Length: 187
Image 1: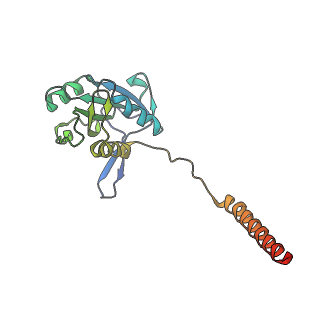
Image 2 (image 1 turned 90 degrees about the vertical axis):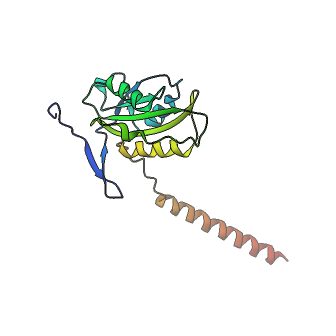
Image 3 (image 1 turned 60 degrees about the vertical axis):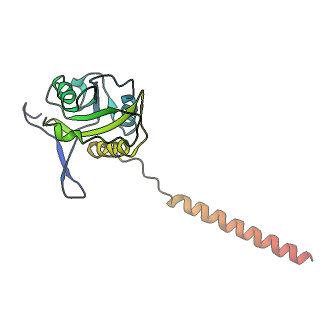
């Protein structure tokens, strides 16, 4: 176990050559720093669908997912949300902007985050109780997935089935040839 103050995050190389920090496990705790009307639940379900496990307390978690809906000013709201989180755990910060416009422009909030525990900061758009279906939200989710330790799914091999399929095809072709031969032989 690392001493307090030390971080044991794992760094990987991105395709562009830059180091990418990964969260050090699969257990996450959700913290919501304002009113999302339940829209954050979509992201929580996406985490679970990626093999991550939601836990009840921060102490049980490997990392925290902090949802920060913007109510006034981005910098102020993020700072207030971060002040409510005790340090020491890696944080995935999801900054939520309320709008009905899926093309709404928001500057990247990551420029305003200086906390060393924050692994990734993403900006998402939501309206009422739902995340908007838009490129910004898709991009944000891919950025989040990049820092998750995701187990590869089961690899399906079609090799054993090809022999069966090949055998069936041969039988069908033989039956067709025999049927055609019998049909023409009767004429």
